[in-house]
Amino acid sequence: CAPSVSAYEAGVAQLVRSGDSVLEVGCQLGRTTALLANITTASGFVLGVDMHRELNGKSGKASSYRCHATPAAAGLDPSRVHLALVDPWDTLALLSAVNARAIDVLAIDVNSLLGNDLMLTALSLARQLSRVLPGLRCVLLKSRSVAKVERQLVLPEAFAAEEGPVPRAWLPRVIPAVGVKEYRAAARSWLDRHPGRQRVLEIGCHVGTSTALLAEAVQGRGGFVAGVDVSRSIVERATALHGGRAAFGVADAWDAAGLVRVWGELQATHGGDDEAGGGPTLLCLDVGGVSSAQGELDALSLVELLSRTFSETLQAVVVKSRCLKSSARTLKPVGWAQRRKARGGCGDGRAAEAAAAGAAEDAAAPIEAREVALARHLPGSEAPTRERLRDALKKRHAGVA
Image (cartoon, rainbow, N blue to C red):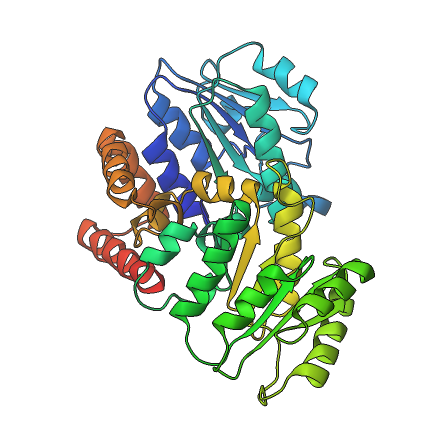
């Protein structure tokens, strides 16, 4: 995933090879399409997909989107660059446009289609198309919101290997775990690495076993641990078993207002020496429906909802979710973002492998295409200036990494 146009085009230069067949969704017959045509060379092919649109913008005003009706009008070779005006969510129409051609690379810019960066829409489209195009080597997705999720997601083993503080933009860290054992270990690991007063809320606490274990971890620190579940009978059972160590209440994970209210009530009545108050610093999620291998969109929407609800204090979310763990392994930065410090899916012993793969991809990508892309990012710049600005970009990303 790429957070910006420059990273997107740099990712194109890194991932696309000579002779590839590329499906560009959100094609504007602009710089990116020209770069794809240049890299794939005469033996490759680019199929652009876009919606029907007013080429001159609304009311005749200049448009920042596609302003050419055909590849030839945009100065592109029509024998190697085709444009199909179809709805990319219409799978049958899209497959008809592909016409049984084997696609190697799928490049998606949802913002060009919708005029907005919608994380769940981008991911659902990428998932849908990757399933109907089984020969894909890679999917390149331009989305700042998806790139943010990629930065937030970190595998438990990668989190354990991290050193030093992380940028504020990476918070809350989202640590996906599979199984109760890994889920509890990940939460304990975060608490061990963050000593001092912590406030923990487990959503989907069931009979309170995990909540009680977390309460033991913060015992003596002056923190506060609470668990909530949607079932009143289960909460009563949890209170009977572990009420002396943690507080329990009834709340629905998807009811943000209800969670805030119940959290405040539990803190007011059971807070003890947690004089500072405030929202939770750690959320633990064990909610039905987001733990399966197919609940990625539901899991991400729930994490987003809770992250915004407790944004002032929340630092980490530990979620029992097989699909999010798969996402943490699958989502990888490209372009300039790839040059920041390895983390997340690359931190579980694969950092060197990922760095080597990135270097190999850089070496394999045509040097001319990368230089053309850089020159287009910085029009009119002299070579030394481009080099200085490139170094500045590297330092910038190293600073936020």
